Length: 204
Image (cartoon, rainbow, N blue to C red):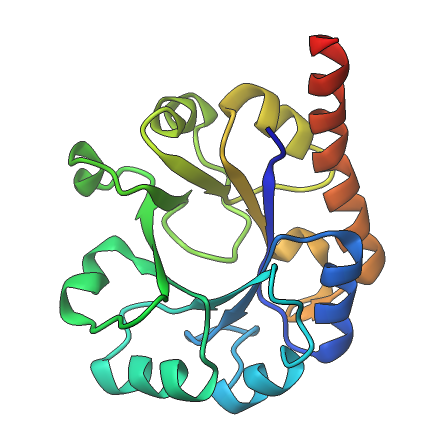
């Protein structure tokens, strides 16, 4: 299986294009308080040329109904990613996918897991590595996207150890907070794909 790859926290068109060119499966835009925060209008502008097969993800944190509606109407994402507990108070209409975020140590992980979900540390976008042993168990319960502390240097090990459906990176592919580096994006994606290629060779 080819690992699904999301590049998160994109803030300009050049970074979006770099992610697309490098082979990302999803691009994330942050609408929560962060150095990577963008407005719905700016996100819509810089994501205008993203091919349809690449998912455009709205990344939020405890949004109000009005905040979500503005993002939904102006940016028109393919996916809403926010804490699992947020969805009960949000009206997510149409074909927009839901990617609930479960944080390390959350009691809600004892419940039945949704089909697709994100697993990361207590704080988003800070490079906090989660316990891969726990993550490996969760990966058996659904299409888990592993986030937190991933880099080109460890993503292959993460995929081999955890066997996630996907991986999600932000800070490790930046030259400065909020500024993505095209070379680092490509290096990360190539490192993740190497693991997939090795798996194919092993099966032959």
